[in-house]
Amino acid sequence: MGSLYGENIKLTIFGQSHSPAIGMTLEGIPAGEEINTGTLQNFLNRRAPGNNEFSTPRKEDDVPEFISGFIDGHTCGVPLTAIIRNRDTRSGDYSELKNVPRPGHADYTGAIKYGGYQDYAGGGHFSGRLTAPLCVAGGICIQLLEKEGIRIISRIASIGSVEDKGPLEVSTSEKAFPVVDDECGQKMQALINETKEKGDSVGGTVQCAVLGLPVGLGDPMFGGMENRIAQIVFGIPAVKGLEFGKGFASTLLKGSENNDPFFADGGRIMTSGNNCGGILGGITNGMPLIFRVAVKPTPSISLPQQSADIRTGTSAILTVKGRHDPCIVPRAVPCVEAAAAIAVYDALLGRRKEITNGSAGLQENN
Image 1 (cartoon, rainbow, N blue to C red):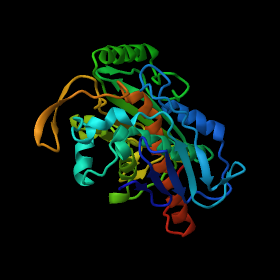
Image 2: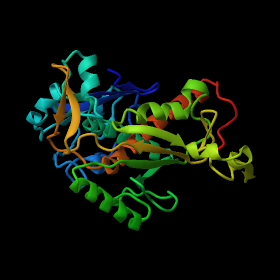
Image 3: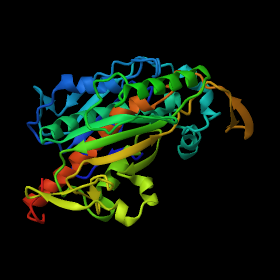
Image 4: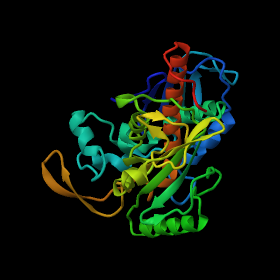
């Protein structure tokens, strides 16, 4: 399975939605780095299920247990491994899905690829439950980046057709519903509740910004920052789209409108706009790195859906049981932050190697 990410750090995600535990191993973190477990837990709580009316009622504490690489509050140089125990599972709710797959989910493709031996309970390794260990790794990287003056902020940019207003300039992490404009947030919540009452689900978008980045992270072609971020962000189940800066809207502009003019400010080179989202040629330019992620509606809904029986090859009607989010977007917000942090920290370590080895060009314009 493709559950490995990274070039300078190596992240492995393991486990299934209903296995005894899920977890992650993060290799390449230098020894002696202090990790605040209280801060990490607060970050994980933002993603944890069962905390509000918009998430699945499945209740998990999501407390990471470090089994290697972490001693007396500091990394010790060996692979950092943590597990999160699954305690509130109801595998019986998923028994029908072994043969009758959910539309929009990986039940069918997983069954074919793994010859029927896949773990279908709770979605197995395809489940959003695996974003919990992703957030453990990302929460650690967020702390390491903050020591370098690099911050990651995000918000719910839209739910359905309801969009948040105002620019993303400060963190929304302290809000129960992470938007810039609270009035827009109330409209989003009303839409989620309305959709939930109908037995359906709704999707949306998440916007993320990385602030304080130096110039020079990333590489041309296949090692660009867009590539690095895209690879790990698309590891978040339900992500269906990704754009940087102006993104698809830039296709409506002329070059004279889309280009970000350079100017000098006290010896620092900056741009007067940021349509490029802080990346030029795959490399950070010192401006905020901004991207937006599209999250599809939850495929597991309580409405009857057309499906097919894999065993008999006949059509079937499926009514999904179990506990599911009517909207995944609010819990996806910290997952996007986590993914961004892992990608950026990996690129930062790569840049340091370039400078140490003397292969870097001009000094970073930071």
